[in-house]
Image 1: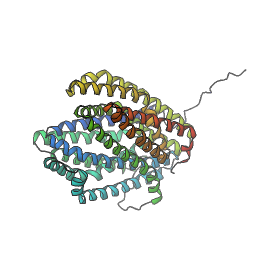
Image 2 (image 1 turned 90 degrees about the horizontal axis):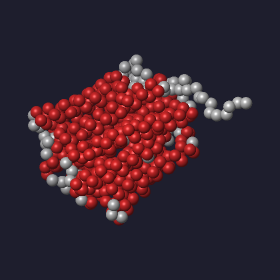
Image 3 (image 1 turned 180 degrees about the vertical axis):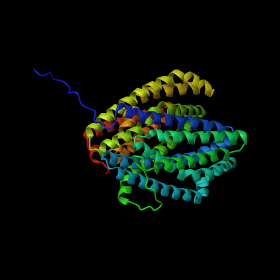
Image 4 (image 1 turned 90 degrees about the vertical axis):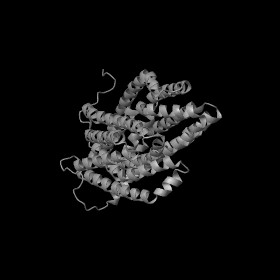
Amino acid sequence: MKMRGKEKVDRSGYLFSGRDLTALLIPLVIEQLLSVLVGMADSIMVANVGEAAVSGVSLVDNIMVLLINVFAALATGGAVVAGQYLGRKEKEKASQAATQLIWFITICAVAITVLIYFCKSWILHGVFGQIEADVMHHADVYLMIVSASIPFIALYNGGAAIFRTMGNSKVSMRVSIIMNIINVTGNAILVFGFHRGTEGVAIPTLVSRMVAAVLIISLLLRPDQTVSMERSLHYHADWKMIKNILKIGIPNGLENSMFQLGKIIVLSLVSTFGTYAIAANAVSNTIASFQVLPGMAISLGVTTVIARCVGAGDYEQVKYYTKKLLMITYLSMIVTNAIVLAVLPWILKAYHLAELTAATTTQIVTFYAVCSALIWPLAFTTPAAFRAAGDARMCMIISVASMWIFRIIFSYILGDYMGMGVFGVWVAMIIDWVARTICFLLRFKSGKWKHDAVV
């Protein structure tokens, strides 16, 4: 009699070994951690310039985050196309995709930069509205300097995405380390050493992004890389390739933009609950950025792994790696959130919060920790796999619809109408996650996402 049971699958020929995944994911986690820590250090140093500077810089940063998300979305599109070509073992086509991405993203970034300078007055007075003269001055100075960095951060995003596609996330991590060291050191020297105002924060941002762009593009031009850029200043647009990049980039960019818009709408609601609610929400958001950090990093790795598998036409590997990366995300999220909850009392002491604010923050962070460990991976890692397979349009439809119907509408129902305040806003966000999870699991089970490879 034959023993019935699961046959052992030979995975020796699979595209990524356990060591390959470790080499890909650890630098991504470090890079994400650096980004969050440097962002916190920047905000502390800006605070030393004064409250007006903090307000002016934060207003401009809202626009910059929106633009960076657009470039990151385009970079993801290029990474998926290049990754699928690599999966098909067409390295030359992958290099062509990298070249098209870098040129296209640079042209778009330069055009946006010129547009910002032409529309500076409208942005400062129309978008920002009636703000105090002191805040307006700081916003003006910061916008003038930081806008010049837009093409460079676009180049860095594009180059970093291509290196991740190769499975070489160490390069983007090392360049990120250099960029962040320049930024933090420059801020410290100019703000504390030379007592410069907003320009003391803006100039290092510009210089660090310039250095990062030059470094990553120089490395991408080396012909010994698995994927490299063509060493030529003569650019010929390959519209078929660009269309494939935009097939992923546009839906992803719209999704990110809608998400930022949703955050702004929800923040306007939170501001009506009082000062304690604004403070509790702000601190909770800062802590939350650490709570989901490993998940965000692994999602970048998912794009690399799944795009290669889809390019190879091996959907068994797609399913295997999606499940494996989900399990890694779950484990890392559980560990991270356990650590955050363990050190939460000390974090709250460092913020010197009032009793009501501290209690509300504890309630939010504890609730968020449990939900992010249980729900976040399915709600956000799964769609990263779909995008890598070319199913970006459906990801956008599900994410945007869920955000508007559940996150925003339920924020008003729970927070305002039912009197739950700022905690109700966070509950509404988790309802949004649950809705996304159900939709994405149904999409995964249907198998319709398998038919959208972009190459």
